[in-house]
Image (tube, rainbow, N blue to C red; front, side, top):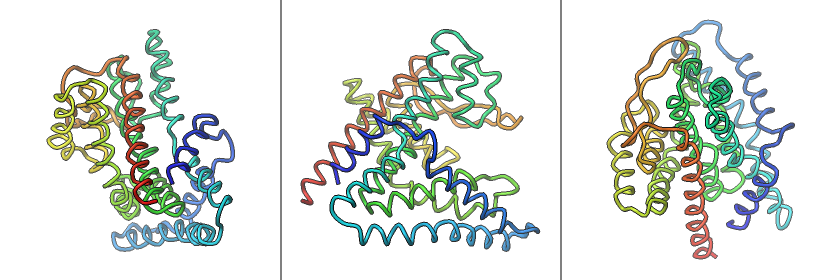
Length: 313
């Protein structure tokens, strides 16, 4: 298991995210097709909930049945190669860092227009009026949250359930990204997608929060940093709108000694969110520090997975 994980991370570091023919593009098309076919003409609560459940099953089952079959009957070298390729396509470590640096580089040079354009590709809030601190805050939030979604949760489900586990997680996460909104259209239709994603991310998110706290302790060589990260996770994480993003971002902000959260403009409306973390507001350099925190957390995960693999072998 450990060698497969390392192999997938090496491939990701060399190749990065595929520019074309990424399976997630096809998955997105399939999800949109199912939604178009099954979304109810009348938005009645029960009917819309059942349509969302049926749509979720129509997306998941046709993909998972052949994946489980292949995982069961393909063995040896070819199974290991398939596992490396599957996990490589499911994680987004290099692309996450690259997206963050695309914001950091123009921001560090004072090019606010380019920085706002780049951060708009990471977050859903209105970025046109963001200053340097606001851009840094939004980028750090995205990096820390997506470190859990795009990297650590995928590693967790591969370690727990192999190829079927990581494929199911990526499908569930994509369904949530497309249907899991609290808008008028998706409030009921996307409820199943949102709840299943919450369940599958519950343990990985908290392991990620713990690894951020440990990574900050190691980096800062200060026990107080570790304690601050845990305190932010416990006291602030539960107040966030997402039950999994809150602990992750709060622990990461506490480990970095910065403040995240607060107000933002979303679809023309000012929405006030709880403050996460402790210390000073985020600055440009904190984008790099957030990326470094994820790298250190990844080393912790690899060390723990190596021990687990050794014990189980």
